[in-house]
Amino acid sequence: MKPVAAFFQLIRWRNLVIVLLTQWFIWQCVIRPMAAWSTVPVFLTTAHFLLLSLSTVLIAAAGYIINDYFDVRIDLINRPQKVIIEKVISRRAAILWHSLFNVVGFLLALYLARQLGNYFVVIIQLACTILLWFYSTAFKRQFVTGNVVVALLTGLTVMILAVYEPALYPHVNFRYFLEEQGRVLVNPFGVIAVYTYFAFMLTWMREIVKDMEDFKGDAEDGCVTMPIRIGLQRSVFFVIGFGILAIAPLSMAAVKLFSGSWSILGVYILVALVLPLIAWLLYLPRKATAKHYGDASRWLKMIMLAGIASLLLYFWLQYYL
Image (cartoon, rainbow, N blue to C red):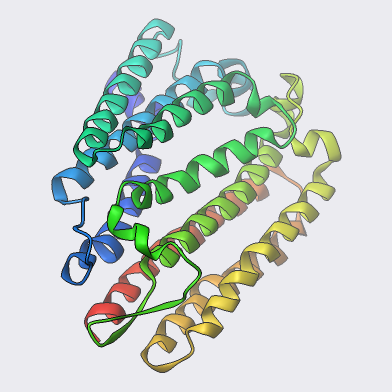
């Protein structure tokens, strides 16, 4: 493998594109249109959004690098053909890239905090950097902790947009709808909160399934993941329980949207998210092989992408119908 291709594989460029697209969809479909009616000026202009998204992507890339740095032994067992550090990229180079990405990502966040006039918000990037380091060195080998950390970090990639956008602050409440300029709108903060919850829950589920896929290598490395501690079958039941917790609020939101023009979005949630999740939960217990769990992990990612795509429908219904 050529060094450039190996580097992009090391930083999981496909996952970074998904992070970037997720943030872009939320900004473009939820935050940016608020400029037309919000009484508070929108802070995340095009330039500010791009800087915030770049900061997020750089810190995430640093996290992927340090994760592989400490996982060489496990990966040689689970996926030897995909090992990059020591084979293509030296450990020294990996640490240097990790440090560079973290420093630049944090400096970008610091600049945005200064523009916002609120330095407190950079705690998020600092916390993410620290969590990613300890996840790679310790948390991922602990029972439940590693899964929670990854799910939390994924949810933060969505919620960070709300933290850096003061125009959303007046709408931090439990109201489904707002009335602005004679129009009934879905609460934009509520939309971001729902997507944060969705990302958190499905990521936690997917991380457990990935641990089930990597059962052999993790066991030989002394990890205490959920499948190792309680077994594959009980882990499947745990994931199913989480799946139900993810489906319940989605179903409630869909029912709530079955009014007027919003019924289209309600139907989409049921057809593209709720029903596929139910089918996925029925599919998961069928086999107990690494290939089966790998396929289940990929299908769950597709459902997550379908959730992101629903933002386009929300945008059209909110502002153009």
